[in-house]
Image (cartoon, rainbow, N blue to C red; front, side, top):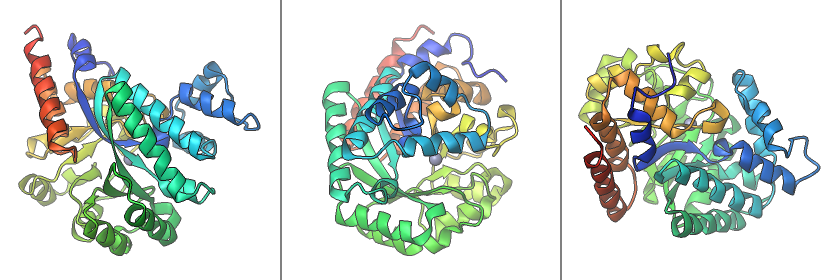
Length: 345
Ligand SMILES: [Zn+2]
């Protein structure tokens, strides 16, 4: 299946004001950003040349993705790297007309590498304020537990979220592998974050079955589900998600890259939408999967058979179920309506 948008929709999607709800901080580092980070740390093995980096970034398989991801993690060594990465990610978002994003940040990767928690918070907050002022991009944070790092990481992430809570923090998440990492063990940390007023948005059902999504709902009190790809295998679960208006953060190209789906045309997004589940479209780790949010909207438009009005409704979904302040939601919804109204039928 083609990755391009249906005829004539590419320009509509490019100009459409968008919100993104499932996109990772380090996973958003484009070759341009990595080149800047590598230049700050000349001793690294990562090339500082953008062209060589584009080659390095070309997605080969999941193992290669992990290699690229970890090499970028290794380049984020001090608070200035964190600030630069965050601001530059917002610049890449602005170019796609992404106006609001909940960026999934894994503070544990930085604090365990020696960046003090308060310096980390200051760096992301400084970048957030600058991005809003200079780029017109409103950022909010989801702090996620890297599941593979276990309960120690969970404890540290909850501590950072609750004790050093930065102004932009809105939610608490759980990422990393699902196989061998049962969701319920993280319940105490989610309970703590929820008690602090944070929203629960764990990844679930990306590489495992619908029972993981049920665990995320029951034990972690998930308000939105990261991926939820396997949900359609359980019609009663789909019904539950639709009835309780629990949205899924769908990332088509990511699901293909990780082989959660065998082919794009087999992606279950249509079954989700037809069951009345609120679907949002996201890019996950865009440069590392060779995609961006505009491309994902194009793919969704093909899979769901949408015209411009349908694509605008997808964009509205993301705004409505976001944790953005009401005034941001209101103005973004107005801009989406205006963009659609200005579009030639
Ligand atoms: Zn993710």
